Length: 284
Ligand SMILES: [Zn+2]
Image (tube, rainbow, N blue to C red; front, side):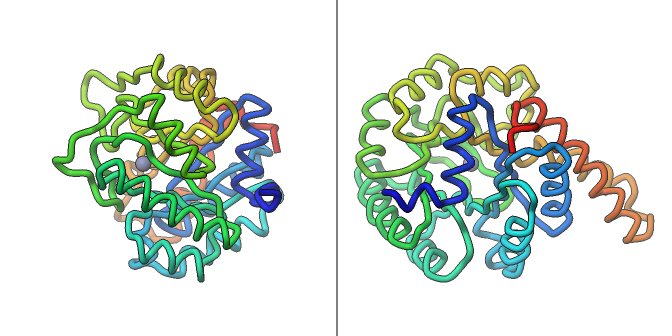
């Protein structure tokens, strides 16, 4: 497995585990998002993971090349990750032909045995092409803009047996289901099972990195608590992008170049704030 030490996402998260900080893995829907996030990473001297949803590969196919070019040209470590890839054939196509450093092979919509079998096959396929793999244990409830929601499928919490089985499947990063949700948490806010999250990290025992999905509405102190129990890859979408959307809605009549410029500025500041929260600032 010596090839893995040259994989960018693997390197970024290995350093985070050693240094006990979290790295933002931020969904990008357009070039402004990429520009702002990489600018923030350079300003803060922070590592960063840029994430695309499979929907982008269909809707804006050139976005992956923009992300890959931005990552390559950045003065800090930046990798490119495909989040929630749920289609068996698409994953093989992506691994064969697109410049991703890592892929989330998400087979959580299948029952566990089939999930594990498919994950193992795809993990072997990706590894053979130098791409590291994330998987979801249990099943995280809800959906986000750009991924297939698990709809009325029941959420399933991760247990120690799951962790062992997914490690046996050879995955590099594990995203557990610990009462985290995709989408909004509602008025009561997030109610993570922190004990379970801690137990999953202990069960991993350094053999894979711990990933957290479903971070909408997270206050800074909850982010820090998650880093404390061992989360290194911190997936964000709305948590960071919401202020940008809000500004766009309020300024829709302004000239486009102004909207773009001020939007990038605002998003850069927003991202820097969360890099400080997770402790990745100054670590690149
Ligand atoms: Zn997710």
